[in-house]
Length: 206
Image 1 (cartoon, rainbow, N blue to C red):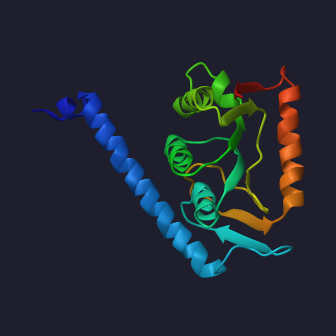
Image 2: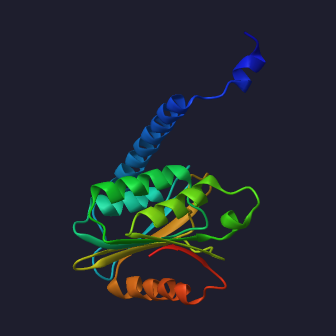
C-alpha cells in the first residue's frame, strides 16, 4: 500500500458516523472542562443586577457558556443565540439540548454570508434543515455580526454578550454574563423585528 492509497481512501458511511461521534464526544469533554473552569471562577450564576466578566485566552467555543447556563436552569422556555457562524459540532450540542430539555422555542441568528456563497456551508444547510423539521426552531440568516446568548426560564432570564462565535477559536475573547429580564427583552425585540425585513433576511422554520 502506498501513501496515496491512504490519502485517497474514502470513508464509508458507517465509518463517518463513528468518526463524527468520536469528534462530538471530544467536543463535549472539552466543553465540560471549560464549564468546570467557569464554575471554579464564578461559583454560581449571577444575581439580579450583578455582572460576571470573563476573558478567555485559549481555544474556546461560546457553546460552553450555553451548556453551563442550561445545566444550571430549570423550565427553560426560550433560547436565542446570535453568532457570525455556528459550526457542526455546536449544532450537535444544540440538538442534544433540544432532545434532553423541554425548550419551547429556539431562535438562531447567523450571517447570511454562509448561505450565499457558491459552495454551501454544511453547517448552514444543516441549520436550515433543523429549523424546517423541528417546530420549536427558527433560523434567521442576515448581515449579522452580533454574538449574544439569551435564555429565559419561567421566572427570569440570563444574557451573555461577548466577542466569541459559536465555533472553536484560538483568540482572546470577552464575555459578560448577567441576570436581566430587561436586557433579554431588549435583544428579543430586535431579533423578532428581523422577520419584518424579508428583503434583507432569510428565515427558516416557524
